[in-house]
Image (cartoon, rainbow, N blue to C red):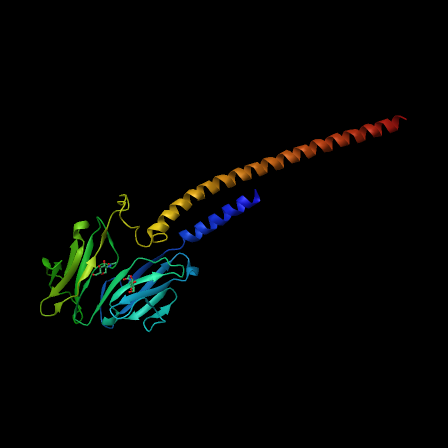
Length: 273
Ligand SMILES: *[C@@H]1O[C@H](CO)[C@@H](O)[C@H](O)[C@H]1NC(C)=O
Ligand SMILES: *[C@@H]1O[C@H](CO)[C@@H](O)[C@H](O)[C@H]1NC(C)=O
């Protein structure tokens, strides 16, 4: 009996550590493109700091290098600060010692003079998205042309463009152009389904979700079933334990009453003699 409850407890604990084992990579300022010498902060927003999340990246020149220890970035808690340079362009992610990884983020740093500020994280279907075309040298926004997958989609006098109620068809590679200043690099905009719609069976779990890989995902499902079983078993054990205690108590009381009766009877008998 004792061993089963101990096992249940262990399973519960491992479950808890599994569900807290997640991180989300965020970028501040929120943009997927930067100019040389811009300051950028990348944060592993973690539920469990003891998991030891580290920020890693792949660039065109190096793979899986870590912030602070591989010659780039300055770690500050769960944040990594970089002064961007075009060689910092690449894909960034957070990784824990145990293996799970966060969402990935593509950053592009340009030595050019125009950037497109587009969402760095996937956009939710139905949301509005604003794209901003910026030059390095002017503070005011200049007229800009926006392109998707290589074709012109809009010319905007104020340099920004809002796509209302984005849908999957808005997903693609975007760039912009400011006449007289140049063209921005291209950035991919990802559109994800609404929370309310059930994802198709082929889709991977959303970024930052529990225990990233699909096999672990099914494991989590199995374990959450075990969790419910554990809870039921623990409850039953508790009820049995309480009932036994109550029974013992009443038995003891009965016994005490009987013995005290015999004692008084004896006393009465003694007195009458
Ligand atoms: C980073 O590079 C490694 C080694 O080439 C590769 O295995 C891994 O898939 C890359 N990760 C990303 C996110 O591109
Ligand atoms: C990063 O960029 C590559 C190449 O443009 C693209 O295939 C990939 O889907 C992007 N990843 C993310 C997380 O946006």
